[in-house]
Image 1 (cartoon, protein in one colour):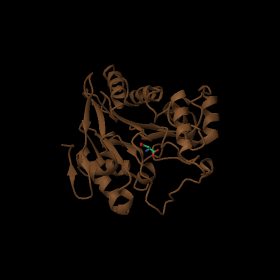
Image 2 (cartoon, rainbow, N blue to C red):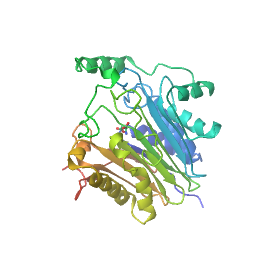
Image 3 (cartoon, rainbow, N blue to C red):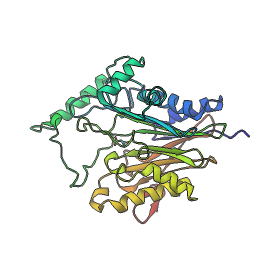
Image 4 (cartoon, helix red, strand yellow):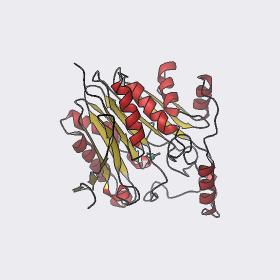
Length: 324
Ligand code: ASP
């Protein structure tokens, strides 16, 4: 029996991805193909300064991309971390699965793999992202930023992020056949320590799917989120009977419970989820993602025109649906 396709994407800029992904699904594409098409669309958009081409660089001025894709059918995944000078990293991630016996490739060897797979060498910096890097560099007077003099360390609260320093496109799709796939692609946190890999390409952290249950994807402070395997937890929560929103809320509370309060006052973490029956949801930590300049918004397409949702905002003990 044909199922109504659903496509969910993080952030306001995910509206275009949701529209493109859904229209592919409506034409009969698999969830996996729709995820790749939607991911590529955002990766190739130079105005999105946290994903793919035009993404903000690390402390040494290099753009290092993280991306992963996971298919509910066959429960397979492909992933790349710290990929430089290559466009369309989510497609490279797919090739890792399809063309190697492995799941994840990183760094220079991931780039060499991409080259051999026909992804040409590319400059990922735009004039705008380069200018932003030089502006940032001016604020770092005296620090040897390219060589790890970046603090705070893991024993201190994470550094508060400014609204436009990061953001990941997380993607969940349900196709007409009732199959699920998920994806995640990002340039990670701007000005990160060179070599840093975030949560986005880590299966179970940035994304996870179980074709019998549902899928989830995350965005936010990856160094925090990867400590709690949040996407895996969301899917397990749905397996235990929670709605997608309840599942996201519980996973965020778990993360907050595990980390000291002074840590979660400084970070934002957000999750989207899509269940096998087409029900979807999302949630974000109140701190970090309630900022007036960067409300937690996520796009859902169940027809040609996607709808932008906001909230649910979560503290350790309360849900705050939307800002008044
Ligand atoms: N999760 C990404 C990272 O930590 C950033 C983000 O989604 O905002 O690299």
